[in-house]
Length: 244
Image (cartoon, rainbow, N blue to C red; front, side):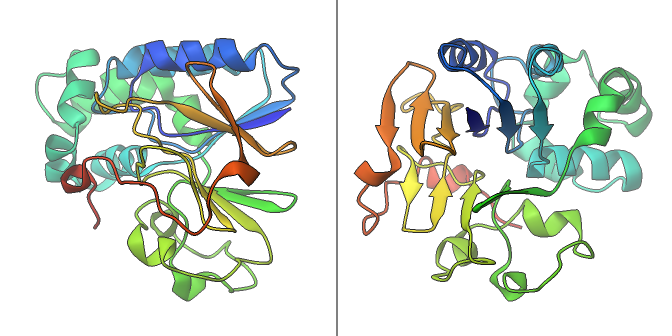
């Protein structure tokens, strides 16, 4: 089975519980939509566990907007205020970073996980599915080739993508980034960020692409066909879900 896992945001306990739930099935491959860092329980422990998972299963790790922000901060000094406002302080705590200074971040965060960060991909095509962190700018949705698009195009999209009502390259699109209280499905877009880091809902969700069902860290399952595709689930903490 092939599972796509939603936004983790340092929620290491829920991640371990979800992996335990998935391990009840024959796992062929795991795909992660990004946002491994910031806001949650322990970002360092999360990266260590993801590295361990990759030694047991075939894994593909996509880049989220939070990884993008950390890497741009290291490279160009950008996104400092983004990181401080949207959960970067918890990552600093977890890595023992007291000053948001590029050299310190490089030494304590980037270099120990250099191989992990270098493997991050903007999107992946899986048969009839496309997966990226946030979806894509509708302006580029029907472009024949995406190789020339910058990484940023796949990590910060939100309501313009969700409101886009056409298939992308004749495939369904699996995305994270926008947190709903339950999985989102409108007939072709499948949202699997169910706000694992938020205390009231707090669900970490995966989607199995062969049999098309959802599995969360508590062991609850739901078929894609059971979702009312004409209704949008409630957004989690709308004020904290930022757009660039």
